[in-house]
Length: 428
Image (cartoon, rainbow, N blue to C red; front, side):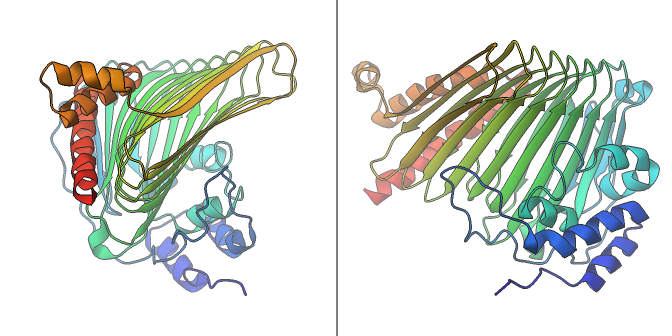
């Protein structure tokens, strides 16, 4: 028997009208609502999320709007739950014509960008059930547009927090469009305020036009059950440098996908993850080489404590015709508990001959020789263990361009490791 939809079409249309959505956006929402239950589930190797409550809850709960401004010397976007985003752009960004708008205001002011890029390239609205649910239920988000030839020297900081106190399902969308020959650094922080049985469905789309360069750094600290999709679409000679810190405490289905469409496009994906308690983090990272002379590299390092599960799927796909392309990946998992479960699953799909491709994967435990050396110098077991882990994760930390963001991630890693060690010690 088919599961009942999350709302009624009447409620959906009322929400759309109350937020003054364009006719085109309302049509996308309605179509997605009508078809999402008939679409297949998204498939992620070795990750079984079918019983997760990702389609439950109510995304359309009325809440009061807050339009307070926030002082900042840099470009800042702050959004609490489904409240309208608070946006303060730096003088540099304002002078360059950078656009940053709340999701619903942006639809009316930049309908052409939405028509061209919103869930049409990086993640299509009918790609699978999770995508269609998102398109139907989206209740918050932002648009960011970096105009042609704009090269920002200051980073754009994004702070997003899921508000679980309302009981509202969090369906959040970020549409980032980097115009031709632009250059921008994004520093993003995502978190939820409490660990509750409330789900989140988050989609971030990054469209990089010809010769654009985006440095994207994010620290995730979600405590709820969440589908977190970061999807990128790169045109000719565009480049995207990812650096992600997955420090979540909830069950997370991470869907990171980069399509190297244009000739000479390039993606460097680096991520560190720590899983503790009884959580499951399933991370699927895919880079697909469509254009000739494209390059995609994946580096994923993870640490597991207690009874947690961490799964890394790394997928490098070179399609037929993508000559002289390169796909490399490394997936490594370090387990600190006998009851932890880890999986490093590299997948190479090569449909062209004139290419380069390779992978490395490992799942293991802390090097006892390193531990012995550090403990022989007077360090406790827990401190020595954390030092070894920080060295293991250092290759990604070094790639974060902002000292402030790098230090914030280091502090988050330290806190999460200490909490994980306490949980492990009490269980023993």
